[in-house]
Amino acid sequence: MSAQTALIIGASRGIGFELARQYRADGWRVLASVRQPADAAALEALGCEVLQLDLDNAAQCIALGKQLEAEQLDIALLNAGVYGPQTSAPTTPSADEFDTVMHANVLGAMRLLPLLGPIVARSGGRLAVTSSSMGSISLRSNTSGWLYRASKAALNSLLVDASLSYAPAICVALHPGWVRTAMGGDGADLDVSESAAGIRSTLAGLTAAGNGHFFNYNGTPLIW
Ligand SMILES: NC(=O)c1ccc[n+]([C@@H]2O[C@H](COP(=O)([O-])OP(=O)(O)OC[C@H]3O[C@@H](n4cnc5c(N)ncnc54)[C@H](OP(=O)(O)O)[C@@H]3O)[C@@H](O)[C@H]2O)c1
Image (cartoon, rainbow, N blue to C red; front, side, top):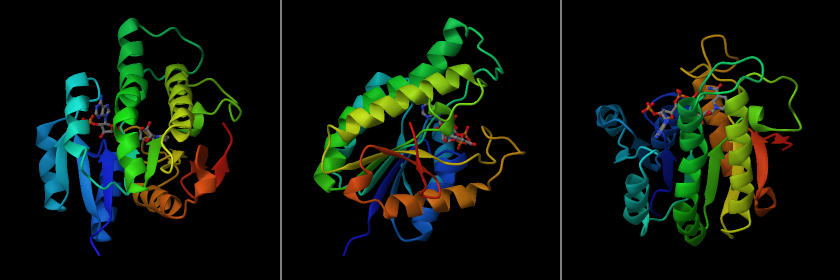
């Protein structure tokens, strides 16, 4: 039997890199995207096949879709994301701040989901986005990271639409926990290896009933 294949979009560092490392260590074939060519070497050293993708570049997204057309993707994870302004109260972002966050977190997903959805559907695989509990409207108890929250809420909306569009792919949004990465900071709760292990196990345990749902890294369902 051939190895299972995982596609990880945004694998240069942080949670994406650790997921690539763990899937490779488990014998998977890993297609891992980076935006800077210089970040390819560390992933290649793990045995990943590296793809170049900047979500802000529409032509690169289309090229990636074509490149992957014939692939069997058991898992495709849109993990790349940016936080943007570190605000603690509703604060109007600059147009550049808005574009940076919304282009990476929302437009990037709107470019890739229609390309990857049919491939994952044909493969009978799982299509996931790395969202955040900060994108949940119902779980909200403060307004920090106003722009980031809005972008992840929009991403969640896109994921639900994907779940209505790409059967039999199982489409889910994931909260990775608060993780010690460049984005999460040193004071975060979780080591990146624990988050990635939980995400892998959650994805592995999904059934069709999970389609269109939101899960914590440890498999606990979250509310939108
Ligand atoms: N860490 C946390 O506590 C936490 C909590 C909730 C959700 N999340 C989510 O988890 C995901 C991974 O976060 P992380 O903590 O691993 O963050 P990170 O260490 O800052 O890594 C972010 C990743 O996204 C990539 N990326 C950003 N913008 C991109 C673009 N326009 N095109 C392509 N790739 C792009 C980065 O590539 P470069 O190296 O090229 O910049 C990098 O690989 C994100 O979606 C984040 O929102 C994280």
